Every structure is written in C-alpha cells, then in structure tokens.
Amino acid sequence: MDKLVIEGNVPLRGRLPVSGSKNAALPILLACILAEGSVRLRNVPKLRDISTTLELLRLLGCEAEQDGNSVETCVGANLTPEAPYDLVRTMRASVLCLGPLLARLGKAVVALPGGCAIGSRPVDLHLRGLERMGAHFDLEGGNILGRCDRLRGAHIHFDFPTVGGTENLLMAASLAEGETILENAAREPEVVNLADFLNACGARIQGQGTSIIRIQGVERLTGAEFRIMPDRIEAGTYLVAAVITDGELYLENCSMNDLDAVVYKLREMGVWIQEGKSGVLAKRGAKLVGVDLMTQPFPGFPTDMQAQVMTLMGLADGSGVIKETIFENRFMHVQELVRMGAQIKVSGQNAMIRGVTHYNGAPVMASDLRASASLVLAGLAARGTTEVRRIYHLDRGYEELESKLSQVGARIRREAQ
Ligand SMILES: CC(=O)N[C@H]1[C@@H](OP(=O)(O)OP(=O)(O)OC[C@H]2O[C@@H](n3ccc(=O)[nH]c3=O)[C@H](O)[C@@H]2O)O[C@H](CO)[C@@H](O)[C@@H]1O
Ligand SMILES: C=C(OP(=O)(O)O)C(=O)O
Image (cartoon, rainbow, N blue to C red; front, side, top):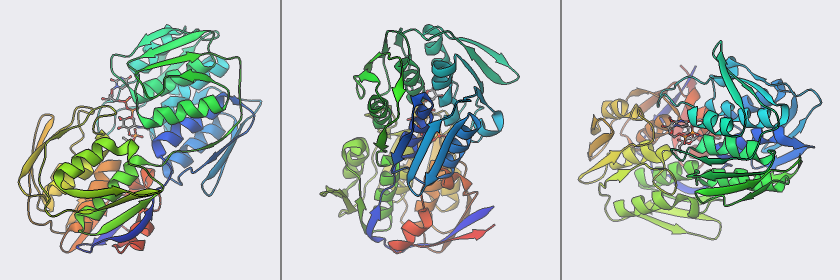
C-alpha cells in the first residue's frame, strides 16, 4: 500500500490542466451497454474507478479499451446480465449498469452495493423508479435480481433528487416503450452530460439540467463519438490548493459555470477568482475569513467539495459552520485535520470550525476520496512533513495527482507504506 509524503508550506504557482470528470465518465461508460455499434469517448480520466468500470463492461460481454484518455467500447453478441459483488463492492457506481441491462436484456443480476465510509447509500429510489416502468426485483444472496419485459414509460417522482437514481432511470427510459417523465430529477452537470451522450446515440431526452426530464423511448441506440466534460470537483480541489498555499493557479480546460456555488462561497471567504478564456485563475485575496455553508443537491454547494473547503476554512480568520445534508457520515476527515492542529468540533450534521494560524505536518489516514483530498490540501499548507496513508482512495478520483501538483511546485512524492 502506498502513502503520499508532502513537505508543506510551499506556494503553488503555474498552470494546471483539469481532467475529464470521473462522475460523468462512469455513467456514460455504463450507458455504452445500450448502444448498438461502437462508441468512442474522449477526455476520459485514467483512474482506478474507470479501469474497474472497463473491467465490469468486459465481464458483461462488451469490448472496452482505454488508450490514453480515449476509450472505445462495443457491445458483443454475448451480453450477460451479471455484475458480481467483487467488482460492485469496490465501486458503488457499478449499480448504474442495472438500468441499461434491464433495458437491453430484460434481466439484471447486480450485487447490492454495501454502505461505505460516507454513509449507508441505499438504492431504493433507483429500484422504485424501475418498478414503475415494469421491472420486478428480488434480493437473493446479496444480489438484486431484476426482470422485465420491455420497460414501459412512466411518470416518476423522486422523493429526493438522487444523482445515480436519475442516471439509472434516464438510461432505462431511453429504450423503453413510450414517454417517461422524471420529476424532482437531479440537475447535476454530470446528469446533463449523460443525457447529452444518450442523445448523441439517438435518444430523445429533453429537460436535462432542470428538475423535470422527459424521455421519449426509442427502439435502438447507435454508437457515437463524445467528449466527457471537465471534472468540476477536481477543479474545485485545485482552486483550494492555490489559495491554501498562498499561491496562484490557472486551471486549464474548465469553466466556472458548473462551480457557481463553490466560487460564490470561496469569494465570500475572500478568495480572488477570475474566469479566463479557457480556464480559471485563483489566488488568495487580502484576508481569508470563515463563512457558513450547507451542502445541497445542484445547484447548491456540492458535498464532494465539503471536506476541501473545510480544510481551507480551518486556516481562515474567525469561525464558520459547515452543515452536511447529503451523506450522514461525511466528516471522517475532521479527526485527522485536528491531528494537524485544526480546531473543529462536530455535532450531528454540523461542523464548527475555528480558524488557526497554521497546520503542522503529521501522519494521517485517508478514509474516502474527498477526505483524502482534504488531507493532501492540509499537507500542502502545513509546516513540516505530512504522510497521507491509504491513498488508494485518491487513485479512484484524481488523475496523476502527484505529478500535476509537482509541476506547480509542490513537494509531494509517493512511497511504499
Ligand atoms: C459516481 C457519482 O456520481 N457519485 C456522486 C453521486 O453519488 P450518488 O449517485 O450515490 O448520490 P445520490 O444523489 O444518489 O445520493 C444522495 C443521497 O440520497 C440517498 N439515496 C440515494 C439513492 C437512493 O435510492 N436512496 C437514497 O436514500 C443517499 O443515501 C444519499 O444520502 O452523487 C453524490 C451527491 O452529489 C456525490 O457525492 C457522488 O460523488
Ligand atoms: C463520493 C464520491 O464518489 P462515489 O459516489 O463513486 O463513491 C465522490 O466522487 O466524491
């Protein structure tokens, strides 16, 4: 197992390219199950979650190869309906093959994903929506066993705008008979990217990006070429890296549109952010101050940026409260930040942060993807050496993290633990 060793307190300066979005690429790769013909995707990040998804696609009977940041897929004649636990447990997004398999084969056997460090994460809303379209489910040996004749269009109202649920239903409805209306649908840019991909393959989807999405089912989808959107969470993480190290970074290939809520809060904290022609420039303003924020579904403040912004707020003047409303257990980074000198107290959904003047390097343990990112950020700002352990989490979601950060001046290296 590897660890990251960071010598902190060095300002990061220069240009940093933003990779393709993990959370857009994962559902789009699984949507390839729906297409008859080959699909070519560009700007796919090289990440562990992507290689896991390609492995899953191959197990299901699709050809799927990555060459650099391009992926080509083609569904073979022997599409099979089984997504085994060994793969699903390493990546919850695997459950997004449920909708496509039911739509293509009328059958799916997908291991029920367990809970994870950030919460219990049930998939009841996915299943309820698919049931409305005519699917039947049983639970056998820890697997969701789904069956259906051709799925039928339906009117579905989500109790909560679930990202994965909206994506599973979008994919299933694309090949269903008749019209599906998704109400209270997730509005995340990654959902829009998936809908745009499906439309490029011949689907008839309207309203993506709003809370009512209408899908007219079609008989078949074809192959297509498509570019994955930039990773707004990676971009947000590096915005924080620029500010927390008192440096200046120009993030290439990203726009502020998808990061509105994060940019708004960072500006309220005193961060200087400017949009350029093909990217975003960020640096610390005159003074950094604590603010209050609450995570919410898009267009609210994203839970996937909560840990990183908390790390920054830990070094601001004054205090602030962060309320986490999306996942019940997403404060696992707090105790590790406290080991580095942060003053943060958690009470239920709220974390109370009192700014300190600096962090001190320490050995810390990563517990999930964004918690790991927050510890790297703390290490970049800290006095002395920080060792971030269990970094396999980071490899799920940040493409070439050490080499990107090194290129802008960070002293960071990977070592065997
Ligand atoms: C691969 C991917 O894109 N992951 C993102 C996706 O996760 P994911 O798709 O799992 O997130 P959801 O929006 O579905 O989940 C949000 C909340 O709804 C609950 N819920 C969800 C489905 C369901 O059937 N029942 C239910 O109760 C979840 O437990 C959670 O508390 O959106 C999250 C919220 O923006 C992000 O943090 C994740 O990075
Ligand atoms: C929680 C995340 O991913 P996943 O849903 O794949 O666990 C994330 O990207 O922060």
